[in-house]
Image 1 (tube, rainbow, N blue to C red):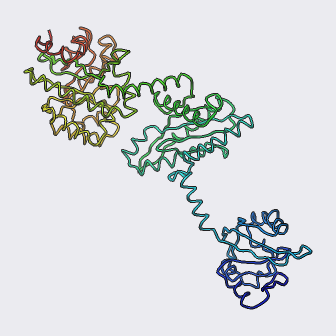
Image 2: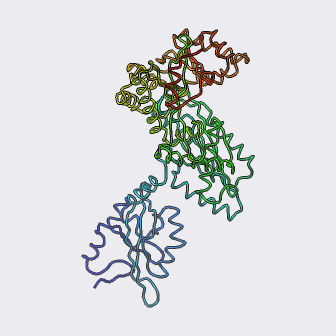
Image 3: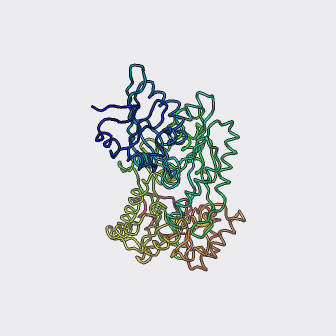
Length: 567
């Protein structure tokens, strides 16, 4: 049987050699915590010679924090009860490198309570700890910006709310969404988008204190948690500081870009006392900021919640309406002032609501855009309008264009041209009898892709019109590169002519520009003879509006066509 003397291995040399040469870090200490023996592997890992360490204190080979932990807690525990298990220490190699270890040790006492035998095994867990830390980092931090992700944000917010409840302090949640971020990705590329997100993360961090949290929760959305707020005025100042910081020019792909954001603010306990409620309400306020044009902040209010709830109700109703086929089209005639005949129709969407009657598109199209329902709904509109135009052709009516409004979301889809081509082929309608209407803002969102898509449509002989012209402030430099056939003057400029001198000047300028670019011009919203006379004298090509006829269902249209044109 082995015997121990003064804590050192005695007995047969084989046992002592086994202790020394085991491929495990092992050591034994005396009652003062001095090293009596160490294994060869212990020396190899830490980089020491045996004569350097024997007789020295074990704590000399621990990091400062681990040394305090050993002296205050674990060594007294070991000497008192005779064992410790999986004690986490950091040991320091001779070259200064720190490793993470788990130490388990046992001892045996004599009848007087003195340690007779002691032995410790040390497990190097440095790589395992690094792996665990990396797994934690991947699970809790955004990889692009290094900021807390959605998961860690909720934990931080939970802690802040709990602490605020104990201390009587307020907590505010800022929900930020970058304005025009899609434009950066689409125009400058995803690398530029990533660079912008990193810049935004740094600037947000510079705006907050150490006790606050900045998190990126996905895409271009960030959340800031502020602890110990004072008042709404303080929060307003902080929000303004964020917007000012973001507005400093950023160089992306060699070009200067000025970022802005829409910020929603929710305050605990006024706007909610739990994580879900505060985040949801801050998100609602952010959308309110975006609706007023972005680069602004909004505090959450009960009215916002009501509007958000109403929007949710519209979204649900829209999906049901689409499945129940509650949508229908009406058609408004367009008159050619040169031939004084109907030259085409614009297809307009309506919703036959089961309880509220007929609803116009301004009430539901924005929600359809946000939810993505506009894509299948827009395809249905295009298909239905083309089918109706073809039915009139087969009935022997004159050749007339069918104009269909296309949403930005639908136009941006890579399969849009294929969709148009497929519908024309399916319905048999001649391409030159279809006119695609797009707003200025739609084509200006991504100019290069817009030109490509419009050119593809033009090659297929589809007519193209720019709708609501004058409201998007697009440059003529860009406009001349688009293969449009027709400009539609926005009705907000038409409704006050000829009385309003500013609107009159705008309309005249558009007409002159249309002639110089060899584009036909159609005026929308003509309701009075004075408007007709003014536009006629200035050689406007076409018009549409209540003066000529209100939008009507397809069954009412043939009579108008047969009855003739403009008198």
